[in-house]
Length: 594
Image (cartoon, rainbow, N blue to C red):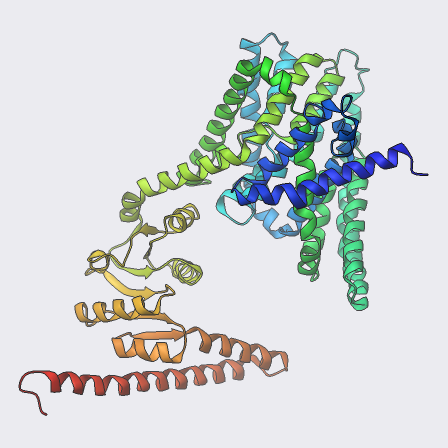
């Protein structure tokens, strides 16, 4: 006999899986963000949506969730798995490199936003000093669960956002204990509890790090020998759950344990396998959390309080976006466009804001009505986060493009290399030129590529080289060389011929698809043409020889000899192909030999 509780759990699982498998693809077809889709699903099936009609229509109980508390456990597990997947993309070395951003910009952003918001609430609202600044620091928190999936951790925007979010996650426990210490009903031992939690947390984190260093390679080695993907999945979930429970047991957030477990696995040689196996859980985990956010929206309250809610959301967004962007810009940690994009991306409150609001309510610092109002503000802020991210991206692109010409002149020296095309190959060439102190300027016809590259600190200009005359404006007397990296063989040949005719002594280095394309480029006048197929074959041969135990020196020498011989063969072929064409051209000229 199936109990009512089991039936309810099965129904909740059906709603979540139905949203992930049916409704969300429908939103994607109309190019609606999955984030908004999940929140709207939560609003639809939640207690203020169809869930409110279950009394009149009992059959709706099978497709709705009566209370957000029913999936609260799933939502918390979703955040834990999401942070675990983020930890897999990081490493302790990257965290060490970000330490100045974490404890400098991160601390400044949280403290300054909390101070401004708290002061505004104290002056405008009917709040006590403790309540106002407690609410201010709660609203200053930003959403790790939404921001990092949108921005990632590799881009300039993602690195800046992650640094601040990491500090906020670390500061969550002290914030909670400080609020509890100001409770009218406090017993006076909150400071002692805070110190106890901090030293116990430090011990647990150290134990997990040391234990993971020695045990994780052995655990995953056993799973690898069994050649069973399910064992990898089970071992991964075991590690993340144990770490989350360990940090929660001493009063820290389970998020810290989840992130730490991901970092520990990222340091092993099995992290790519774990990341691939757990990837499907990342989207589903985020979906469960967002459904719970949507369920927290009360349509009746929104309709009744919409002027106050709009004012509160707009005020929080303006303060946080302005402070975050200003700190990043004036500290020199980000360019203007990047700072603006990060500011808007971090402007909404967070899922951890709900935790701090619950703590303030329990500590009797705020009333229940106040807590519910700011919970609505938080839910609305989370809902509009994708929209803010899109607006921030567009604003950043416009800022970078507006200053492109000026900054290019400032950053360029009298002698420079021109890189045409800034995809994967062009970026690598620019990185190496910059590393060796050589000046360059890159051009690309994709405005999104240009904006993203400029946010990462590259000297890139928006130029369509297919437009007549645009290439001649770039290649002037102070250009040392031209590098053609775009993947368009016809355009590469046309540009090579044009440049060689206009500039006989200019070094022209071009990317080539294969040997025949490289020969055609040499025939057109290229100084060097690098076939991708040739280089990949040489790198593969080098790796094989080294893995077989051949000494590095002889391998490099032999690879160099083979490359030189093949290059000479391709150049010879290009010259042989060129001579008949020259003879045909001469014969066709007036007075030519028949």
